[in-house]
Image 1 (cartoon, rainbow, N blue to C red):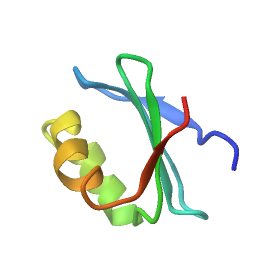
Image 2: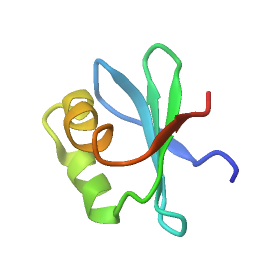
Image 3: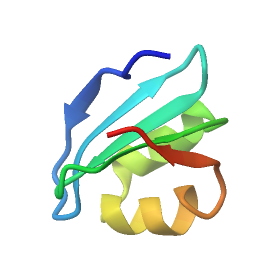
Image 4: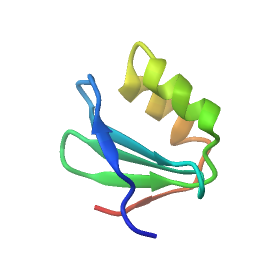
Length: 73
């Protein structure tokens, strides 16, 4: 799969977030430049992520522990 188109977010830990609804893949670019792709993420989870008061905390609490992820960048 090619890179998911990401958009910048207001976060001290996360630089950008992208989602591919067809494959249910979430990409998260951290401010240190690392990029992770998480599989099997439902759209509603991404909507919650983008609405969270702290995007970085949400990723740590709700994404990393629940969805398979791999570093892609």
